[in-house]
Image (cartoon, rainbow, N blue to C red; front, top):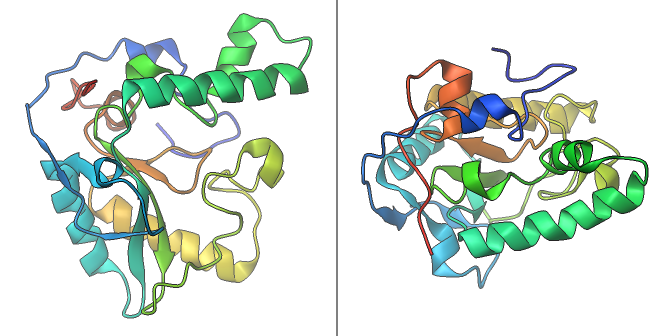
Length: 213
C-alpha cells in the first residue's frame, strides 16, 4: 500500500482499528535523540524500546552534520483526546456542512482517534532535522502545522522549495531504512509497531498497544 497518494490511508479508516494487537510488553524508555525544544517533559521523550533502537539506527544513517530532533514521542490518552477535540472544532468551523463522519475523517489528517493513536502506543515520533548547533532546519512548513495553517504543505509529498524537499527526502530515507512508516499528511510523523504500521506493511498484528494513563 503506498505511503503517499492523492487519497492517503488515514488513521480514521476502519481497517486501522481492525488490526489486532499482540503487545510485546516493551517498556517506555528515553528516545535517545536530542529534544527539539528545551523544557519538553521527559514523558514526551519516551518511546518503546524497539522504537528507540530504530531511532538510533536512523540517526547513524544521516549524513554528517544532520541530526534527528524529537518533538514528541509517547502521548497520554488524555492529551490525545484533548487534541482531537480541539482540532475537530477547527474542522467543524472550516467545513460547516460536514457530517460527523466527515469531520472525523478530516480531523484524522492531523490527529489520530485515541483508540488507534500511534503516539499513545509509544510507537510514534514527531521528528525533524537540526544542524550540528541544534538549529532547526526548514523542511517546508513548521512541525505540527495543520493542513489549514500550512496550506497543505504539511503533507509529505507537498510541493515545497527544493532545499526543503531534499531535507524531507533525507529524513525519509533514514527513517524508512530503520523500519518506520510515515503518516503521509504529516512529514514529521513516523511510527513502527502500531496498528497503522501493521496495515501499511502487511504485518499480521500491531506490536504495541495503548499505554496509559
